[in-house]
Image 1 (spheres, helix red, strand yellow):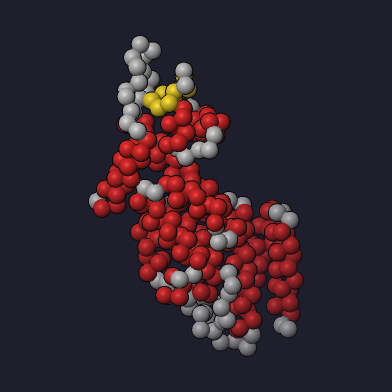
Image 2 (cartoon, rainbow, N blue to C red; image 1 turned 180 degrees about the vertical axis):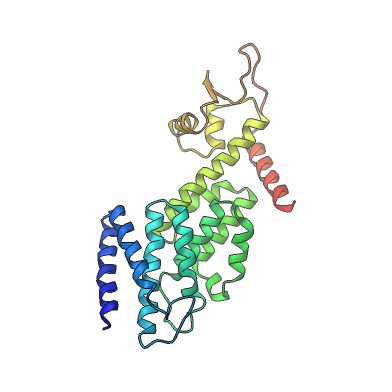
Length: 267
């Protein structure tokens, strides 16, 4: 093997071992060194020159960037994810005919779709979908992201949250947790505009929590301006002498939220 490739391979193995140990500072150092070493190869994007070791060089570079994307998820660094994904993407598109398929391709493409959904970049989400092949669209990782986007736009928030229990890959959990927060913030924003208050029980069901304690923690951390008083979550600071507005059933509220989401989607 080419001495430079041997050096990269050995450093890559140390990088992967550091990821397993969650030694993120070490990982970042190794990744920077690997990226510098990769710049010496003209076989890599954007040149794609046909060098004697082009296939080996392309393969190890793709593996490095795939691990870099996974590292970004573990570090919960969305900016790093985006940078590394765009460095990786040419290996899935422009180099497709030169390399054997990667087992990580569809999980990572699905991760990127999920990231776009979490960031509410819906137009880019659909642009990425249009670039995928029919076989890619049939992959469970891609279908997972597509079904989430459909549920979110329909206001089917219970389906969004329950999807966390059936993620196609463990790396999806980070973005699923962010999406759950987005869903709750969406519901909370609608609720506080529409009503003075909700009972703790109704608020818990509205915000899709499994216990009152989870609701109280959410209020304390995300909405300290709300008030918990006499069994109610008070959105607007109403006077003690003024009772909360009569609220409709939870079913009607959920239907209203879903209808509002559908109107937003149409407009």
